[in-house]
Every structure is written in structure tokens, then in C-alpha cells.
Amino acid sequence: MNGPLEWIAAIGTMIAAGMIAADLGRKATGWGFVLFCAVAITWVVSGLIENAMPIAAMNAILLLINAWGVWQYLLSPKNRKKIEKLEELEEEAEAEVEAEES
Image 1 (cartoon, rainbow, N blue to C red):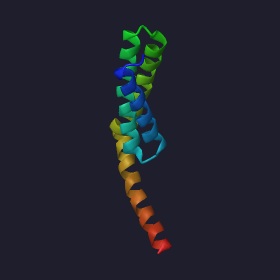
Image 2: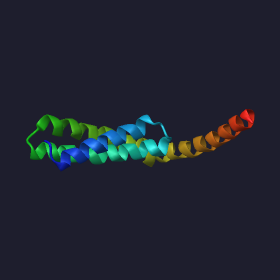
Image 3: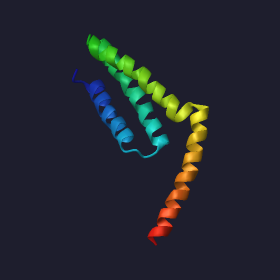
Image 4: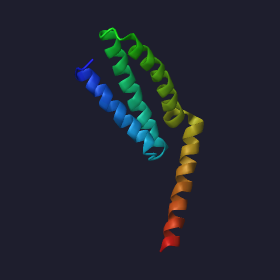
């Protein structure tokens, strides 16, 4: 479990966690979940190849959880409408804060 597949999965996992922790907005968080899905698949493949069933099983479950995150942040029609409205409000709030600081 020290080959290129595992390194790609490990680095991708760290990047995805950073994207979500950075709280750069719902779209960036959604793409963090997409990356988490990709690396979970990589970990499942690695676990199956290396006969590391705990890694494969854990990441199969994480894949489902992260796919739900993709749905919530990028694909759900209801949440997409919320995102659009929140982005409009965010722009207005930023403009107000900048005007107050000037």
C-alpha cells in the first residue's frame, strides 16, 4: 500500500479535505465532494488489489456519503436555487461591508 495509486488517493484526499475546510462557498465545497468521490473509488480499488478489506469497505461507505454531498451541493435542484439566492445575498452583503469600511 505504498504505490502510486495510494499516493494519488492520499494527496487527493488531503486536497478535498482542504477544499471543504476552506469554506470557499457551496460550489467549491461541492467540487471537494466530487474529488472525495474520486479518491474514495481509488482507495476501494487499492484496497481490493491489496486485499485490504477494511480500507475498501470504509471507502465504499465514504463514497456513498460523499456522493450525497455532491447531490446536496451541486445537483439538487432545490439546493441549486438556494445557492443562487445565497450568492446574490452574499454579493450584496460584501458591497455593504466594503461601503461601511470606506
